[in-house]
Image (cartoon, rainbow over all chains, first blue to last red; front, side, top):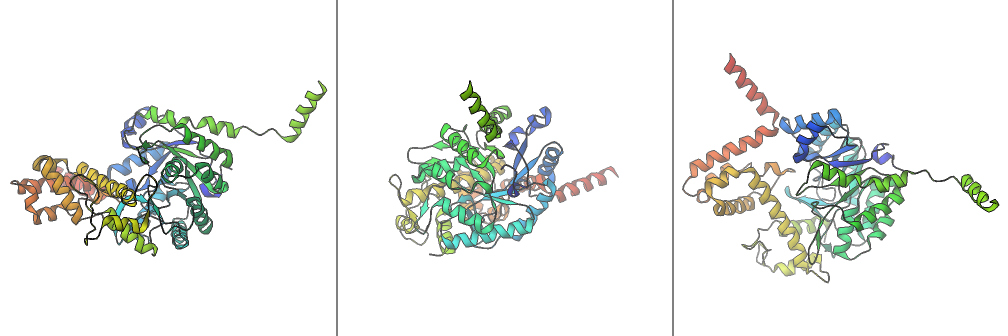
Length: 297
Length: 160
């Protein structure tokens, strides 16, 4: 299950997000990290310091690109300039797959810089799937889409979020970046069972999983990526791994960022579940032999 | 409501400037009730009204762009002072919402805008404009290959 056509048939383990406060530690200590996830937009530039840093990282680590402004769900056409810059970066990083969010965020040339929820309508399924196919065709690498945290629901929606996700990925024939923290946050904000969501996702399309922390307020939860992962989110992660098999996993920590070692240690907790899923299942014949041995003892 | 119509209405509300106390305005730009506008496309739940759910996105939008802008122009903030700088940021960003996929370009029109709105610079307009030029040049130099080449050319000219 882990290596599939949606993650370029790779077998990545636990990674963390590459963040500026950790640059010095990484360059000086050269810690062992399976892979780094970069925010594509931070490196879609013409030169200078960002690309110098990226090249240094690429010399020593595997990198996967994650975007925040493709806005697959925007009603209007994709930006050609954006796509051109993204393709230049894809060639530089040789990312085996590329992820961005199942959301919208710009209209009439104005950008909100937010991951706004898409209304779960059949019109939106068609528009979103078409954009994903366009990006996939242009970039010539697998594109996977991530479910977002949301704080509002629309009257216009005609299906649940997980039904919408399933319809989009089937229509676009793309992979999924399953963010189990986002599922948890949205489930609390919109009163649904997060396990129903995790159990409904087509497991064979999951290319990567995100885990993260969040902030709880009196009436809602915000996806702030500034805390350790809480137990209910680990439970969703465990179920996702049970269904999908050991899958490339990434811890997001974007605010109040602690030391590199602290972030990495939090990410590596995922290994508890990944290693369990990696254990070879006992073949039926061996099981029969064991039962027989017990019976004849 | 089509997808495009819904996105236009939501973006209009999300990008509407906040009140002085950083809450969502009670009226839309054309004077309608924001409560009714939110209720037209956002579902309430048992804890939050449609208005309150939309307000979360309105506040997030402004906090995000104000924070990114402030990070880019600390010198200008020091020249005009924190209260005037806060007013300046909100007025400028209301006139110039982001038109780029990256927050890095937020201040691209600041020099021309400040020149046209000198009241936001207080008594030191020339100094404020100089600082804006310097801070924008720093942003450009940080990730612009062409600026690096120009710097190297200047260096070579200096050595010759």
